[in-house]
Length: 563
Image 1 (cartoon, one colour):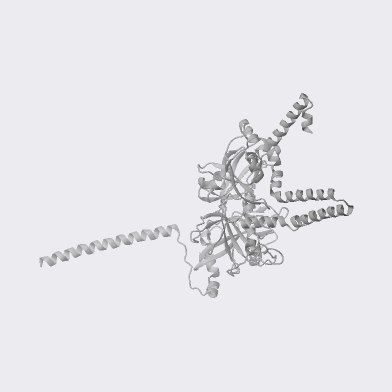
Image 2 (spheres, one colour):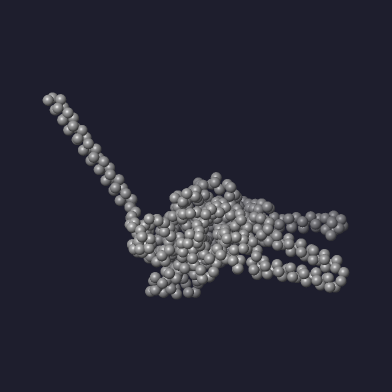
């Protein structure tokens, strides 16, 4: 049709060229708007191709059928196929089942025989940090979702103070000019002075149109990446030069039969003000520097860092339900099938980003930030801890898991923790307070590694269940996953936690385990320095005595010679 219209004359040719130019321009400049449609086609490409193939064959059979009965049969067969496809893919979730199985088959799994120790325990849960940050800004500002990252060799909660989404004009003309960076290991997070960092980002999560982080990153993708990559979580951290940058985690879709997501690298966005040249760059080639997973090793600030999308790590952890075989998660099996438990009042579901020390596990894994999952049996009434899963937060292509179930340890999982905490403090008003975010706490106490869960008591609003009120000195509870006992600890004195655990549980441990190992209190820096000073003084005294002995021996020898 277009060819015939083109041949009619010069006027028609100009119109075709004009509209072709408009269409090409729209496809180029608006690719961030239609990219979700490309991703949909990519994710369901096998099902779409299968549907069109069956439709083509069905129509062909319908047209070629001679009698009415054959035409009706061909039509009914097509209806039956599409009905079965709908129920299997959408109602019974076959697509997600196969997608998760593809993730499992492509996992670089490593079973560890010893749990790593935790270090640099964070005191406040994510939602408390988010609430306290929102209390520190004005009406025209929003806080991005906090993320735990490594900043200058310490773990920090970082989040952007960005123009609010409630007022459109703010998101069009303003920059993101401040960040919060607060320590995760202190019970007193401060959202002022040195923890309020001045920056200038023309790209932000709450900004509008081409200045939005998602739009700017999508514009940066090449045509092949438009079909295979999508932006995910946005993190704020320092690069190797000590300059604050935005790091956008990318998800890469792989495979043809039931495509599955994987870590696809990051897009790094540097600071810069909003101006005309910046505008031209955004709408044409987008913003950001792509760093692939293979190039991570060339950028030290991205190693042992938290940059992995939680969508990817959740699917990787969930795929361990296939450890018992392809059919094990099906309703008639489920011998070893597991799930990621969901906490009803804990808005921050797993993974819990935790700092682990793998030095004594002999696995070769780095010590740093990991996405931790505590998997439990699929049944709603089963709350035992089946697997502990450690997924490197920097996207390293390897996951580590510890099989509690096969070792018959009988540990309680995190979904059993809230009731145990509530039972230990019946005087609390648990209609307004809730124990949340039970992250692992693994320490060497009384002769062996012991696993606890560290939970924080948060007050949750009656009118807004997503609003958490975090205290600067929150109540903390440690629950022994093996003995099920609850230890209430002092948030201000992390150095005393292990001793408090031992004081409460050592008699139970001795009676049950027949051990006779006592708690060795970790010495403070002052005590260690005093020991060193005492040793030096003792050595000096010993050396002085030795010199006196040698002097007297010489006198004795000279007297003997004179005799």
